[in-house]
Length: 143
Image 1: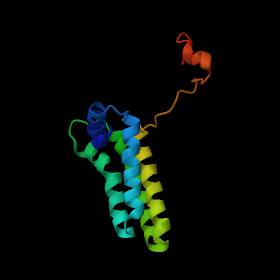
Image 2: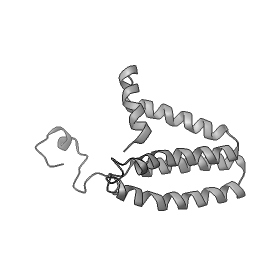
Image 3: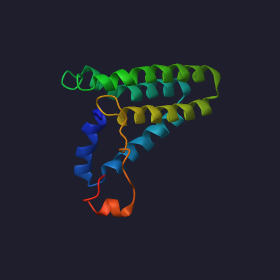
Image 4: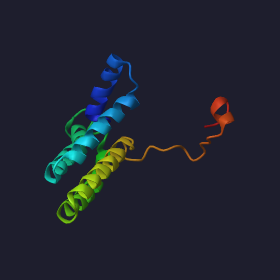
């Protein structure tokens, strides 16, 4: 589930006529710029809010929480480990390098959340998937 992104992007796409991917890229670039230009303490808090918003929406929504139980169970340990590393970096490295680390960590955590199915497994192409052009054009071939 995309949480607030799923609630925001489709209506914006309909209103503006822009592709969903383009709107996601604009939000991502704006978030990256804010995190990179903020003070380290502010970046730490904003990154935590960004990393927790969608999973907490899924966790506390009674309609989708049971569906995302496996997804949430797989996300929290990764989130806690990344948060410990993030706090260590906050104490040990320069502010410029820390803000870069925050942006990369937030990108990774967003990918970990959005790149999983509801049962917690990663979204990926099947093993027998082929990128050959005839396979893509001819739907009789198995994908």
